[in-house]
Length: 243
Ligand code: 6GU
Image (cartoon, protein in one colour):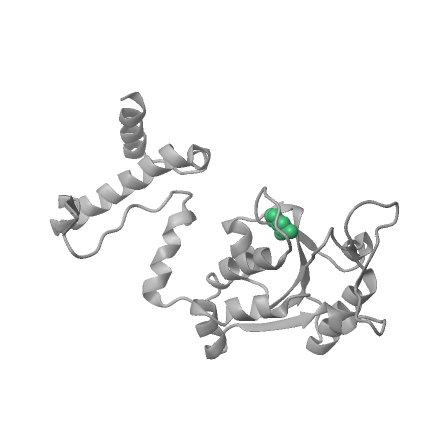
């Protein structure tokens, strides 16, 4: 899977993605990260890529031409026309299902805006998908692009090791993860729940399921509507909600 990130701050993208699991996958050749500096496509000698908005108002707008040229150059070089994702608070809110869908692509182009935005004609001409990472405003699209790339990459086969892949289960079924513990058994007077020390696998599984249900009901009741609940789950939750 190859990512092409159009940005004015390529070092922000490079630094993050060369670290940790994405960095390891890039070294193995499973993922390819390519940053494209929009400024390299400025058509004036000053390297300006932004200008005042027509109609007035605060801030600057990134011009259509450098972005369009950068995008065309990427497509020409790879000999393909992949999806072009623009990171914007006006986009569809990103979730795990979108991450799974995007992980099926061979290549993705991501476009990071800055200032007050980009010329709308880029969205008409070049952008195929608009994605937001949540209802708050960032100073630019770079952090959002990194969030999307990270979440998509861990769904690409081979990126996670076998033991890391186990972590997929958490959001998979719309339940929050159960609590985890490691040694020592007691820390600062706080003990690991006895059931986890019992060696009784079926009981542990049941306890974890209940913990996941409880946490989801407590912290993310909105998710609970999407969970496929068994009869046992319902009985347990009913007891909890009534007490
Ligand atoms: Cl994708 N971009 C910016 N600038 N702000 C955001 C966002 C994206 N998602 C949430 N806030």
